[in-house]
Image 1 (cartoon, rainbow, N blue to C red):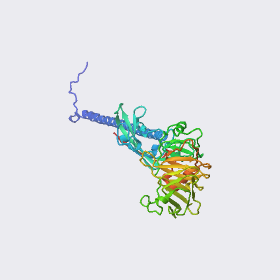
Image 2: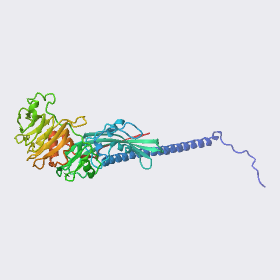
Image 3: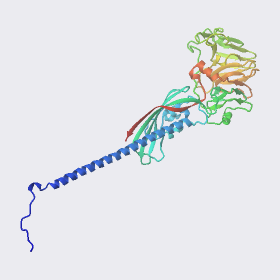
Length: 472
């Protein structure tokens, strides 16, 4: 028989009631808070990773843009490497006045060195390549500034700054997620044009009609036509300077602008010019005359003892028949004696008359007036021939003329001749022989502004490199 327990069930102590539920709630909160912290950390890491990736994309865009721009400058626009460019606009096609010849748009670029063949002109055609999207459209670069420190003769350094962006979206206004700026200093070095042995011009003129005349010299027997197209072939440039079948140019023919200094003037010109003992009538040379370094030569010259340079005031030179202007620089002293003729009028010889100087060409220089704004030449220069070559450096940038032929000497001129327009009668045979060291001697004699040569430039190496990032 089954027994039934009729006693009352045991009850929990009053303090135990409701204790389990709070523990469960608290444990749940702790776990939830941990999960929330873990999620926040994971989300923060994700955001940080995204930002880091965008900053990296911006940096890579700036680096790529820097490489693209320098390659473009080195390959197609090396003459711009010695000119400054400051871009102020932050959108649209980049523009800077220093790299533009478009005066209507504010451009003020001037060629300070002749450009080599195969370079690209005008300079503003580079602007479309100074800002672009990189392949994949996730990065974009833009040139901010380019600043050159140095000169066209020795080169120098340049500081280039490029902006890179990490972008999202397409079209003309994509969203920028991060930006980076790279600033790099590079060395700018001059070098001879590709294919040219030398760079010094034996004949230089804004326009040239060489005809059947010859320019001799393996190193410096070059011809420079400053208004000719620099991208023409040698055959096209031969046509541009009207080189005839019997004419010879040993060196290269170059086209393009070339920065030239004004020719030196008689010391004290014009204020002290009239006060010299030589009067206008006696300063003219109209017959056989001898000028000797270190002498006053009838009052038209004086000598600087510190430089051993004899400066001679010459209003004009007009020789005919058998007249000879004989110039001697054979004196002694250090530096070597030299003579400079400052001609304010015309220099013409005809027949078998001419100027004779047998010394080093750099020791006799004939200077004319500076280039004027006149539409035509203000001076004429025609050098005839005698039985002796004229060894000289002739720089008359506002004169028209050339070799007038005649005489038995070969060459007619040993040195160089720089005029506004070079060209006598195309039927006249004449020869200019340019010594291999002519360029260096002219540079040493007259200073760095006369270190004229046909050269281009290259950006090489990096001296300093700076990176700045700026998340949007």
